[in-house]
Image (tube, rainbow, N blue to C red; front, side):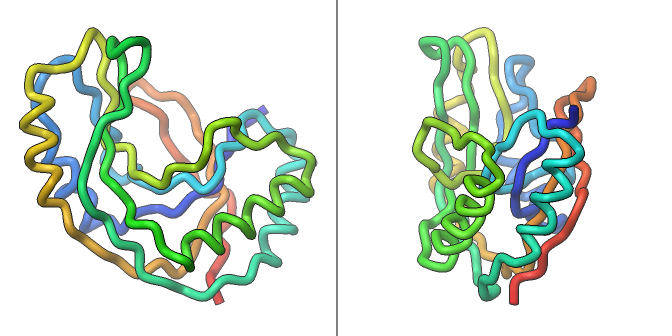
Amino acid sequence: MPRLFIGIMLPPLLQPELLALLPDCGQIRPAPPGQLHLTLHFLGAVSDAVSSALQHSLNNVRSAPFTMVLTGAGVFPQDSGVRGVLWAGVQPSEPLQRLHAAVTAVVQNAGLPLEARPWSPHITLARYSGGPPEDLQGFLGRGERVQAEFDVAEFQLLQSRPGPTGSVYTPLAVFPLT
């Protein structure tokens, strides 16, 4: 069964600017170019029947287009800091929260489990392993200057496939915000 998630893809022109924040070291595995996104909900393995029903329900989500603001950067350490995620921050906003709530309702109505962790909107830029890279402070310093915004006019249902340089995301359906 395919692994799916619901997200907002970042504009292609903004992605190189964010990836340029990353330190150049062997412990860092940057997200593949063109794959930066905000995850609204990770769904995991989903059958074709559930995916089809989910697409139908997501067509009924009503939310106005809005501006997403990226600000700051940080690290989510995992496994006592041996592994972790480097991210760009997303400024909370009422329109983004409403969209997330509407998508949550669809996911719940489809009988799919929700993540146990609270939703923390962010853009994953890279993963590290083997301990925190020495250049982490430089990344955090450069991340303090992150200030970007873009208009969000759609969200997507995406399939995630593992690849040699990280997961590759393929849109299955696009849902315009109206």
